[in-house]
Image: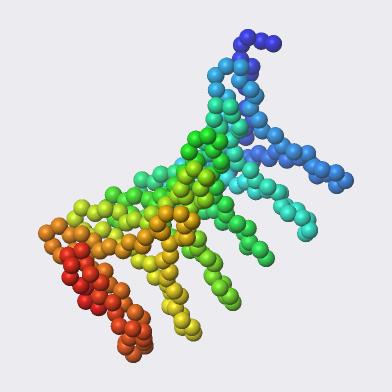
Length: 281
């Protein structure tokens, strides 16, 4: 036992002026009759102060202005035909006062585009799922899932697209947007679909539309209130916009049309506005 710091160990290849510097490989040997040895990279425990880091960094390209920096590849081990390949786990350690964060981000770019983050499962007879979930809270509010597109200083902001999988032979995948069930003392959560406010231009629209069908009929749109067991039933409230100093917005209900543009069902419905007049049908 010594009071001073222990000595460091540096393992490096030599530098070169014109050629490539040497490579470094840390490899365990093959084991034909048993399990091959593992490789462990670990930092010792700290008696005082924070634990120290493990830094893995690829090389920087300094000479050629068009050359990219080096890559970092983490790939699990392969397997035989009847087994699965190895697992990759990235996580922070458990803690009494709180566990650490896990951050994945691309670097900033002064002139070009910053890098993308791609989470993709491999193709298979049954492709794997992507799960994004927050762990349960014992006594406080549950954690939030925030999916935010990018801001822009001069152009339009980034979009968010949720697309289900398509099928070459049967139906495409469903898209379910649903809040969780409540306990005995509370109400289930709301579902709010709201466009942002605007100062000079009209605010964004909300379009709820089913796709066209070339060989059958278009899908329906249903707005239903759930059944209650006591009290007054829930309402369906559809209201046109209020306009200061001008005519309020209309509410129009129109039945479907035939291909010759004649009404297929009954006539359109003119609905009263807040001002008492009717929107044309």
